[in-house]
Length: 154
Image (cartoon, rainbow, N blue to C red; front, side):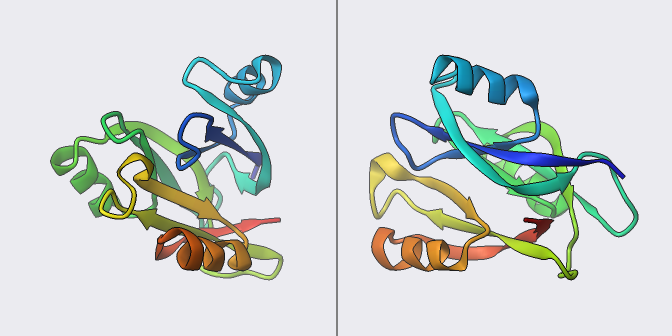
């Protein structure tokens, strides 16, 4: 049961899109160059997640929609299928594993979404383990709280 740091990278141009990764190569590119080849900069550590499949954990899939520049993280296989086949997201595989329910010492990973009807240049998902940050995104930036993706360690 290997635990990895979950790093956050953010889109320098739009700021609305975030990548969450346990991949040291993605993190290294953002840290050493300021911005990596995809235009993302290093944003810090979000918490700790599993990089293998321990009992009771679920895979979290990472998908990318190039026209929107949006990253989608989901543990729901039906949502994953729909995003790939109906919404033209590219499947980037399993990003990491989370618990589907709360355990002592874990924090929820909130998923929020802002549509292009609000701000056409800032469509996308936003993820955070901070409830105050999620509330601020809803109140000040017109995000909608979609779900808790899963629970990870702080």
